[in-house]
Structures are given as C-alpha cells and as structure tokens.
Image (cartoon, rainbow over all chains, first blue to last red; front, side, top):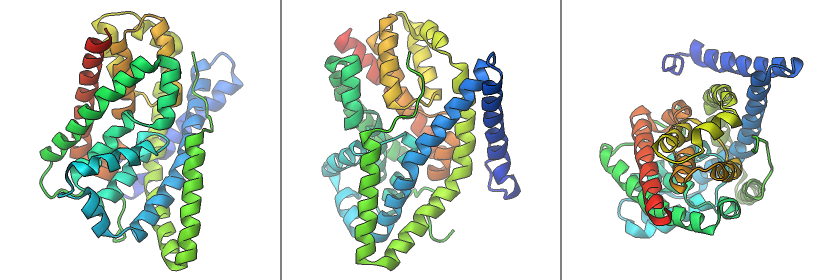
Length: 186
Length: 167
C-alpha cells in the first residue's frame, strides 16, 4: 500500500481507481444477485461513505481556505501558540465541539492551525476532543446509553486526551511542521 | 441493529450554513481574497480525493465483512475477550457517531460491559488504522502512527477508568 501512496505520478490514481472499481463492482453485483449480500453491503457502505464525505468536506475545505486567507498568524500565535498556556485549551475544545463529521475532516483544519503558529499540543488536543465533546453527538449518546455513561466518558476523556496531546507534542522534534497538503508553494 | 445509512443532521446543516455565510461575508469584503481562499480549499480537496477515495473503498470492503451477527457474537458478553475485540474493531472500523451509539446500546443489550462500550466508542472515534494513509498525507507517517498508538492507549485508559467508576 505504501508504494501506491508514494508521490509517483503515474501510480497516483491506480490504487484509488482499482479500489473504487472493486467497491462499485461488488455493489452492482450485490444488487443484481440477491444472494450476494456481502457485495450489496460493501456497495451500500461505499455510497454511504462517499455521501458522508461529500456532505462535510467541501464546506470544511472552504472554511480552511477562508481561515488561511483572513486569519492573521499573530492571532493564532497569541491565543493558541507556544506561549498561550492552558487558556488555549477551552478554545480548542470549542473548535472541536462545533464540528460535524468524521475525524478525517478535522485533519485539514488541524494542519491549517498548525501552520498559522498554533502549538503542536493544542493541535493534538483539538483532535483529541473529537472523541469527547461534540454537542450533537452528546445528546445522541445520552439518549442511547444514558447520562451516567455519557457524563463519565466525557469527564474521563477530556483530561486523558488533553494529556495525550501534550505527550504527543513532546515526542515530536521541537520545530516539527507537518508536510501538509496545505501549501501555496505546491 | 442499525445499518449504516446516510442521515442529514443538524450539525452538517449548521456547518454548511456557517461556511456559506463566511464565504458571502468574505466576498463582500474582498472578492480577490475570497477567490484565493476558494482556490486553496479546492486544491486541498482535489489533492486528498484520490487517497480518501481509495481508503473509503477499502474500508467499505472491510466493513461489509463485519455483519451484525459477528459484532454481537464478538462484542457481547463480559470479560477480557470482548474488551480487546472492541478495541480492535473500533480501531479499524469507520462508523459515524450517529450509528455508533445506537449500535453500542444494542451491544449493551447483548451483555457488553461499560468498559467494552467505552473502549469501542473511544477507539472508533480516535483511532483510524485504515485511514492512516490519509492522515499521513497531512501529518507525516511518524506523527500519524504515534498519534494512533497513543490514542489506542488513551482508549484503554478511558475504558479502564469507566470500569472503575461505573463497574
């Protein structure tokens, strides 16, 4: 897999096309032959994932673009940079809380923050809060698993993933900057 | 047992309304900057598309093999086995929260403990083995693998504390 994901230009579309064809073919076969439940489910799941991606990512990337153009580096450095301290954590939680969709939709936002001078630990705290505190999900969790479970899980997850974010930032080289798809010099 | 199904929800609508409003305000203030913002966003989207497409197709091939009966058999019941199975499946699978929570309540009905449910939900949301190639495009392989390993450890800690608190 790593080979197909290398920046070799010709190979760039080979694996995507092959897997796309596999999932689409299985889905069509599954709908043609009622006995082929695996194919039908694989195809339906794939359509679901595509719709989920299409329903979140374009809006997300538009916001990342606007963020890149409008938000001055100094603002991010001041509120979430290396010297921001614990005061940045509520901002990161707020940002993650307001988001919808799967975790991979948060990666571009995270990289955008990072490149504007947000401290690495704050980037990882932001990503970590994805599992803990999303208000629309929280109401869902309470209704299906009860408020005791939900409250306990949130109360435990916030400190654990805050700590992990700080630990992860410490494990990286000091001035590490992600390779980033986000760059104008590409 | 809920199936994966596409649901429009308030959060997504909110995201689109917010993005559209921001773009309009931005365009009123400075059309040139807004065009540049759109170009940046579009280039990022197109750049990640092939990877995401491949990963989502592979994920759907794996997910289709995880039938409701399998999940119930593997994750239901008490003990260490279902706990680690929950971690493993949660790390690999890609299930949106709106499906994961109803699914978790079904698993609880089949005897899954709070620790197993917490391990399942946390690793589901935080660990993405199959989406690693996408993540690595943003953060690099080293950082992505580190982040996933730590998130897996975090899921175990969260589940362990949940077991102590709720039993």
